[in-house]
Image (cartoon, rainbow, N blue to C red; front, side):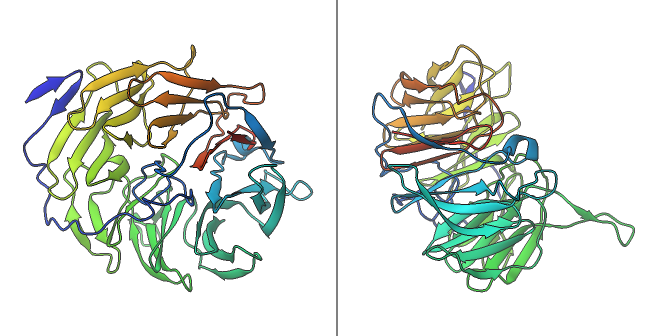
Length: 403
């Protein structure tokens, strides 16, 4: 076993059982940003994007009328589909964050920032996804489908769970994941309630559900192939059709990522990498003196980018060995970031409050930084990347359009 800069290269199998890892992730080659994470492999990588110029500025902002931080839901997550920006804003005349967030889903002109409403809801419109001219989103404890053109509600599911954290369409199925671990104690025993739901995309009917293993770490994004679904910290890869476990993991991970047959995730404060088909442990990155930060590993060409915020900042690792290639501290102070996205040669960081920077993946050098007076530090964050447009979100829900 070889130790490399706090990382280990391993050659022995990881002892996974009942191995059946069929299927590919969806939307990987999509020029749009139709869901949080870009695709169902959680890569946060848009291979068709150009990204902002070398001297970018905020082209426009869209303020929100409700305070996402005090309401407990600061992460708005905008979308960019077919050249149009989509997000939600509060209805100022009716919003009351102590009760419900009355929201409007809007379409925004990417050049001017002017917007038009598409539909409204009496609660938060949460974690939207756009596929085939349909908006799928969590509204309170259910999932709803709306026509993208006129806002007509097509269907709504039965009540599922609180804390719905991810809504994604794969083929004729909608995969929904909650970040809340709940139990039923009606019979005197604690029985875990479902956290994972698979719905029929045409009707919203529940095909099957499964109890989870943990809560927290919002947003929780499942890893989905066209035949299986794996959610964070769970041991079973479940068949998308039958719900039956098709593979058992010896080491469940958080922040799962699948990119070109390589599986990455956070495990006990480190980053691990497996071969997806053989489940052989490729390498592990575990600094001796600390846990690395959370967030989804971003793979660009031959480099894996992570945020080791307790250490040197953003770090580039060799994709084949896990060896540290570079480390970059972007700001004098430490600003949190669990989202960073990439095009073919650049990683864009989305920090709490909306501030952002661009890193060259070859050497970690900072191409540019952007931190305006409006980008006040706070828990609000989010991102979307398509064409030459990069979107971040401020603490009060303000949307920053950067190009």
